[in-house]
Image (tube, rainbow, N blue to C red; front, side):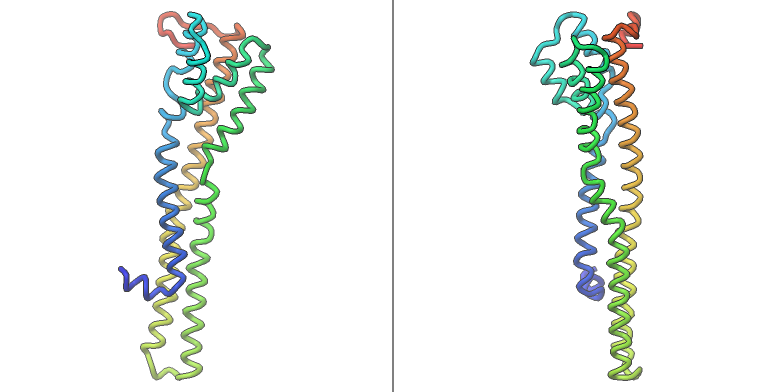
Length: 211
């Protein structure tokens, strides 16, 4: 493996750095964008019980805020519980924008890696071909070793760049779709809470879920 990397020339260094960063981002986002972490089940129903039983205090509010991204959004609405619907919605939307930025963290970096990795490979290809034609110009075609070295460098960097770019692009698109799905579900849960507290939605006493 080391010999293969060495044969690819110095451009293999940034390509390998891109691959390491991409793997780190993919692992971190896979962990942070789990549905059960972002949107805990029955959280709105639990908040409704706290309010109904007069158990919502500063400690529970802080626990809710720090427990999950959805909890942070709901806490913003609860702080304005005694205001009208529009004030609650504005507070939720303002906090929601910050939460979305956190969910999208590092995705631009991953997209950049997907874009520049094949360009680095292409640059390696160009440099390799320049070496080939320089060798032909100075030494003719009598030394196949020199020609093979330049062609090998060109092909290795191209393959390495594509090997990094393809999975990076796939995961970038996957995470983008996942963030959109999570944002939509958080909006639904937040609006559900607002409607319950504004008397526009009822609680199902049998399932203890908010309808």
